[in-house]
Image (cartoon, rainbow, N blue to C red; front, side, top):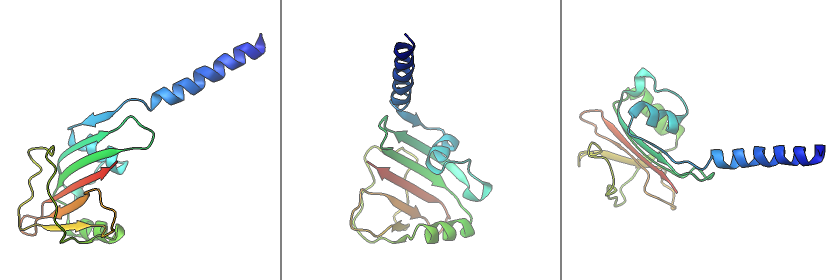
Length: 139
């Protein structure tokens, strides 16, 4: 009897863990999108304007994220350095399903990690306005 009860508890525990990761995350709230992406609330130097985030229900953490920010120069320089980003001159097309506000100007600088394997992630900064657009995809 005790073994059967223990087995039931273990099965319920395992089922709960497995089912907890079975729901997608989707938000158009800029603060929530940033928190899902970065793991914390944005600081003032990020200058958060807009955001959208989608994450699959899979345990592999597949996600698509769009941000529009106006960061301080110090934050941007630090982000580029920490993530080893380089100017990207490859052809890139804005995703068809991007939000209406995700519209970087043509004169913007595009950054990427420069690696050969590329799912389309880009970090785009308008040198005139200082507004940056971040598109990350991990599938």
